[in-house]
Length: 130
Image 1: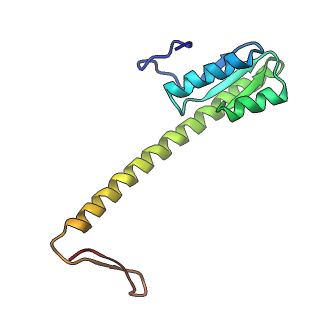
Image 2: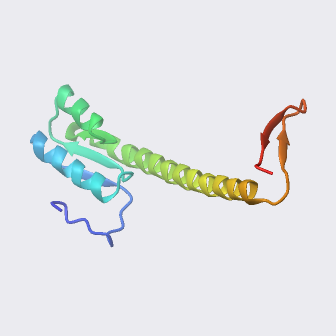
């Protein structure tokens, strides 16, 4: 990879500094997304027009900071890190829910007993094959 990222690299946020070469920025962003789709990517640049900024954001950059507004960088990193943490927690919760649903489905489908699930009004919502 161009950025030298490997599976043993442990980073929480990538701040990428590059001059105004859009193709290199987008290639770096692509490399980061291949390495870790959730890894925050902040573009720090000397100049960036609105069209290029929008293109980078659409491609997956979390934020961009222009050198003249460098004081925004710590806040952007903090925000990107927080969003990354939330995304990781969401993925973990989704995975736990999937496992739980698979266990429930297995129990319901493989039970030797007849099982009925009803709503609060007593209307049957689910029955197993028994």
